[in-house]
Image 1 (cartoon, rainbow, N blue to C red):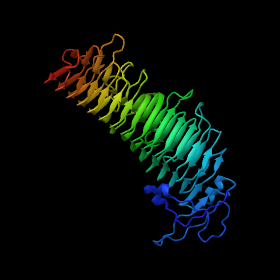
Image 2: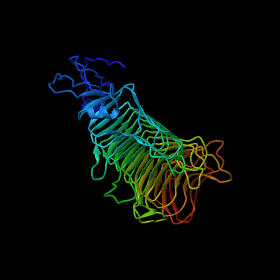
Image 3: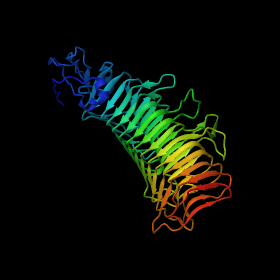
Image 4: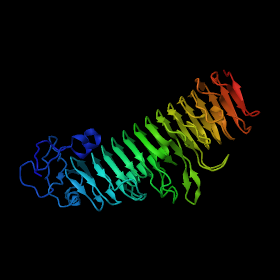
Length: 473
């Protein structure tokens, strides 16, 4: 391969982070035309502002790609132009920008293909291929490996194409100020993007598909923000203040499209989640001293303006909000937050499942969601929802399940207290018998105001004293 030349200035790493990543040029020769050593492009001239631009290094002529990393000065740019087959991880041990221009990495081993161990790394347009998703193993496309004692900051994966890894597409551990944006991540065993104890970051505009969950994995995820469950919050803090927005997640048939276990201030916005057993799950994290129990509820999480759709029947809910604890009235930490303006279709045919399923919550707001084409059950209030508020939700066209009567809002068990205001059911000729609200157990305290059950066959079925109705139509 011959080396090219360019007279364009090198875009600095800071400029790349603020939207110019796609414009980072490939500088393969020094600007004075002198011959460079293998893999070395030399340092660019001083730019117009008097600041020295970032160094650029190419993999052309390098015997190993790791040698090209070593040849790149801190805060420089490494340009990958060739296809590399690696038998051990590419270790990124200095802050830099890695820009793929026609190059790619692949492996037949279950390894971290790119292993980042420092702050200040940006990976642009990476093309990464693993050993296959049809078996279990610790193969990952990108692994950003911080620790609780030494978290990493300012790490970004932009515009990647990551496929065929047995565990994760991107794994981030103990990272802050990170992003995974505009990437294609497909045919993965366990998780497309997996975050352990990460904060103040974003996962945006990615296409994540076909998370296949090979045996013996018990679960799988498109995008997941969690914490380790073997230690307390000091060693494994909550994932917090993360935006998961504008992603398209599809085909996680055995488990969950988007998930947080015990996260705090996780904002799940404007995503499209299709054909997942559970669409979006906001659920608790385990107790480090008792793996059979949950301890840390999700706190202040928001699920807003998402589309969750499933075409195949089976158990699972479209959106789940669940706090910690195991029993009715459990005193463990409760989940809170909001579920706002989502559209959920095709869920509700499993035991207690619904388009939206909630339990063990406190002061949860569920408002202005559109829930058409579900099976048997729209909103499912399972148990222990204290101070819950349901406002302006529309449940439409529930399909029957066997001989069971369909229910727009099903209060399954007890210890549910709150207000249901301005909700409505919109029927269809295929709906069959439908209840507006079903609340047979008396250990509930719900106030129903201005709900519209005109399209149901029976508006409310409730135990004595469990429901008060005001201005109901």
